Image 1 (spheres, rainbow, N blue to C red):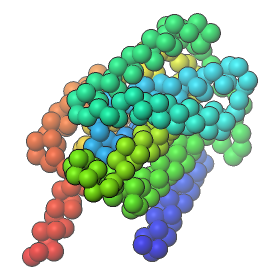
Image 2 (tube, rainbow, N blue to C red):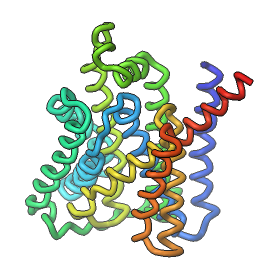
Image 3 (cartoon, helix red, strand yellow):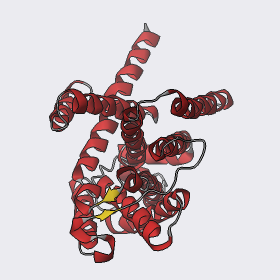
Length: 317
């Protein structure tokens, strides 16, 4: 376990160093715009898997938490000129509180009822923000980026590095949960919640923990998006495409292991960016749907599930 931890943190540091080095070596700004989107989806997919994968509660509220993160950052910047680090930290705290509140209201529901409740959450929050005139209302609000700080040459480069740090933080948390008693408890309630309760597993408490952590990470991932676009409006911030895309990425990668959502987000994120440049961004939804159907039918446990199944077969041979 200790050796695995050293390898993980070594790889994480190499990843951050590579992202930092790319800001010096890569001149084409498009790579940073595309890289930001892909890293953002990695964080969201990992965050989704904590509740949707480990606990088995299919959550369609990703866009609600993402949008709350966006507008928390907008409010702090407009009201107090808060720096990006403060925006992300406060957004994470707001996401944790929202996750706790949502958990109290919805986690006693199961199956499709829970999923419908999370969709309703998105609609309620989007409607509230749409009627909040001081934040631009339905028309949205423009933002002026502050000066970039060294050693970055552009604000987007800095945002990419910030999102890379969030990736490391999110993956580290998901990895810890999977290997801890929390992960084992969540897996037990996913397999059979009633049996887990009878065995003494604190199922409601574990679901609340998963919902709080997942919400905090999703809001933190959404906070830098306002500065990335220099604009925020309810229709884009609370777009249900975030919920569908993140769910698809996690399922395609596989939720049996923390690395599954990372693989799925990178695979689908890169595919979407390539299609947006070569064909049209409108094709992304079609490709997303086709890939999701194929994996649900042919590989319900995702890419990581196929890999683990092959390893088990080789071990028996």
